[in-house]
Length: 239
Image: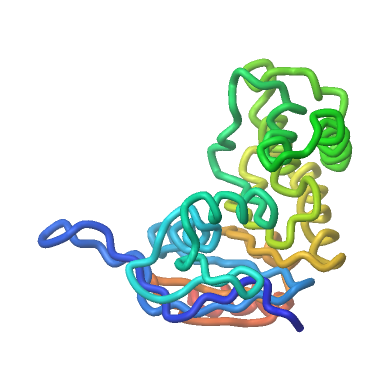
């Protein structure tokens, strides 16, 4: 299958000298169209760093990251921003919503920045909000919503339009169990329709929605398994 995300020998070093921290060490990962990959590991293992670099929000110290065959390191800042708006959806742990914009305006923003007419962008935004079950909050501001509602707005923003790659960093963290399962089902459905997805999670039951589970420890891939074996492997590693 076509690779939507192709990461090769990725290393990320923060700081220098005594403050030097190696967040990722030679990580390689390929995500195909239609595939959902879960990334698991203890706190500090490099999961979020991997996701930010995959989405072009940070640059590797060495190695390459390609989205649909385009090397992100070869792009100018404006071209990289355009690729993120058109092809990559990102669900942040802290939502990253614009307080002065309504839910619909937050979701529509990437589409409008890419030149889409406001009316079409809003229609797409409302449709995405409908997918996550909060179309009735389209004209509400983030400060007037609960944490779970804000999380769903962030997820709608990540999947609006025809995103080819969706990166989700603990997307169910602020949601109750039932709503969290609905969100994972939405992400799974997008991947079944041809999107590539990467899900950072610490729960095996969430990883079970994925096709593969990759385990990071100290910035290194230490295990990889099919998702139906994830819980068994986690139990074995705890013993």
